[in-house]
Length: 424
Image (cartoon, rainbow, N blue to C red; front, top):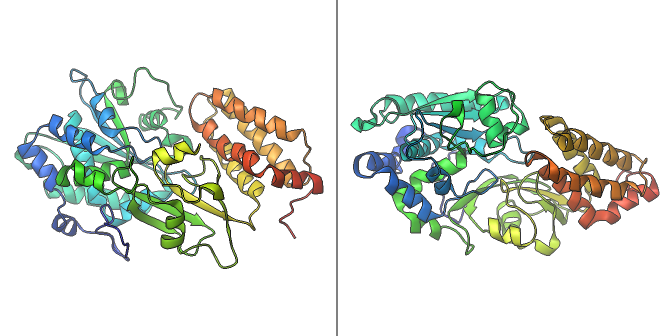
């Protein structure tokens, strides 16, 4: 049991999914009922704005600000798109949330739809999450039978429904505009605003895209108030709780709901059980595979957007991948680059050509074929990644850049010895 209040995981069971009755006993659907019978969309959006809710999918954009960018005189119908693609290596929080308490996601989507006057939503989910998709489909049906989805919800005149969309599955589909293209049956290339999706999204209609963890926070904010949500955080700049995934060289890997801003060392030592026997913390990727390596110097950093930004890193999805002193970071980075090079949509030259180039140079160094001139070549190519069309390439280059920033000696040892020094 956690020492901190559980909000999103309050109904989490060790062996099964929470039922709608259990969700309702914990206050579930009270926020939606209150919103539809006693409040208007502007009031609901104001509460979310005052709570300081920021997107939990990686970018951290203020949720209410995104909703407010839907023009009042915009076209109809309007849509909600819930991102459950979750193909960032090291990230599994959305799956854990679906398997714990799916109705908090459903209610949150309905509230967001009420704010922007949307009538239809899609949950975009990766193909390997088939069991999660089945859970959502079943519980959406139960919510519909209980009167919380469908036509004229609770007699309010507001109609809204949700469809689960099983995607073809690509990492690029986690990017909001690529996700929308995929939903429409198009090639999942990202697009650049303007116009923003909230003005012209799905089928050129206003569309709000949020991560499912973001939606799951909304009912609790509406029910308990903005100050309550802000008070859950530990850092001065944080709000609410956060689902932190921890994997790698720890005793107890898992997904933990903790106050936003919980120090990294506490997450690893107190909640993930500390390092494995005989292991010592070397570094970690603090926010999934597309963030920078974080060294011992920042082992006590508050896991929140601003504190990580202050030390030159990003919170991302808050998926902490832990490495010890026995791990070859060059091999680990090469593994990530194989993934990113494969997952490029191929739309722009820097990403399509640059990521395989970086992958191949890292492979040569790891396998004893490296040369010293590869180091400046890698640095130069990493800079070129910032000329790409979307954020995939610069994110993919982040572990490579930080590998050379913090562990260049380790890379050079590969080159001097013409083999991986970690291999016996």
